[in-house]
Image (cartoon, rainbow, N blue to C red; front, top):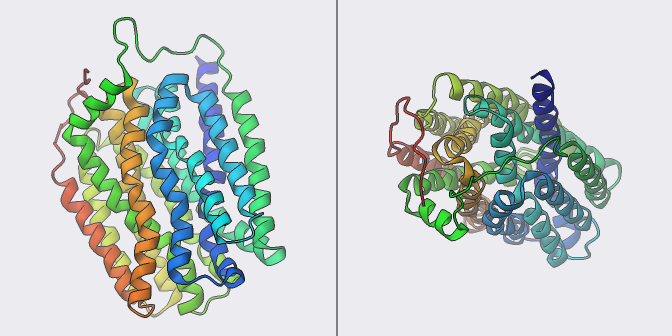
Length: 407
């Protein structure tokens, strides 16, 4: 039993490390776009398109990734995914123009698209249902650590060397982690069979059952608008702090550690809350998170003091994280185990279109309003309110066991 527990901890720790680096890779462009736009002479619209290139393939590949994980298991698919996104990151530093950079970011997005579904499947393979929220919260917290560490690592590498060297270094680290993940996840016994004899269903029927479930579409809509809010902030705040607030790159990077540092704690706390108090009641945490985040994004946009603005941003980030973890836990707890990968891939595939749209949407708003960030932030506040409205329509299941779907 002890060895089983240790193995769980090692696996979740390794997945956590991969997702930390993955999120550094994912968000590096948000800071690097500042010197890149100067070198390539990019407008706000073109900057938004380059940032969105990642999310286009990230969205399109989600369902494929979910299917591959359900079909071949988490070990091979996850380690391959880390290798693919790392090669894409390295390629980002070798491009000669904006088109090449967009293509490299698209490759990075395709690799990272597999990880959410793969991580969920790995958790269902090694953890009891009553422990899944906490395990998923540990994995999700890697995003916050990636943001916090990444803001310093990225700005330091760019300042000391160049944006090209920054991408190369991150890519090499990812390739090392890919090999380590493959070794660590080597099965010690026969792999768990997701579907027993007589239970095997075709992928077509499995997706069909998910599409007929109204909860699938409600969760998708919630995460779609959450992604618009989250990535609208992440994509354009670095430019806002530097160009509007007059911060230096290094100063901005240091301040930018604060919101995700608190976000790390919020992920772990929310995982515990979901297992302890919000089991099958995730909708309430989503409603709370969306309302509070909307209020504090508004306050951030109107704050005159930079420290106060970052304080408001930190609070909004905490509650946006509450929505994110609630979405993935809802999938793991409300859908059958043999469809967790497919369900996560399907929902994330559609919801990540919000991530794809968001940088371009905010870029277009800024171009149309003469760089009026106040209006851009108001759009994000409105999207957060929509999240709350959708979450109120979730069915209340008050402590009942999840209903296993059949197809």
